[in-house]
Image (cartoon, rainbow, N blue to C red):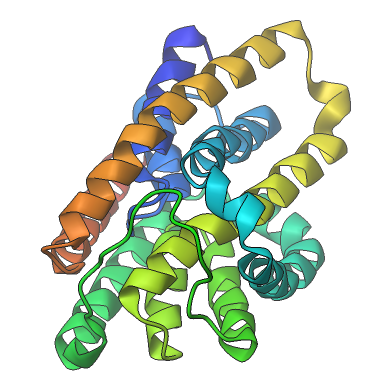
Length: 266
């Protein structure tokens, strides 16, 4: 792995982190296409650079984070189920699922089908988005709903599921408006990815040298810059559209990689 690889993966992470298409899944598939060897460091890299994208949320929503204590409490409540399941299943996920193109491809297809089903069957949940970055005030998310969203987010430990899709759709199923759950999903990403990244770094710190630190920093910075633009673009897009376009994209990508895996054994 070199600097160019780190930049490419950072761009992919920044673009896809907040879209319902799975940033981890895309980085796994991109790593295969780039011919990168599936090592423990690559897995750590794919997890850690998500912090760069998450930092963009802190920057864009800083005013809300320092003024809305109730929202922060609900984010913490939602994080608890993910934290418990993440600690319990971290080793299993990293060893058997993370890095598997088969898992990503199948998850992408299944997730795409479920998104189409949800969007067409549950049009009543499709309230239009109307939010401003850094807006003061509390999100209309109850504590029970926050817990449910936390469990939905935990499903995204499976590569290819998409944390964004799981939380946004799960929140709407739980009765949260689309505008509120989109923002809540952004904020919930902060403790979730902080915990995941530092847990992974803690367990693999002995394998990280100077070169690896440079690669991590490169991917981190790239993801941060790209994610700021991606969040604004995502918000603009879903003001006028639902997630069906993303769903078809997921299915197409999943099918193409299944073909490549079968034909060339990527």
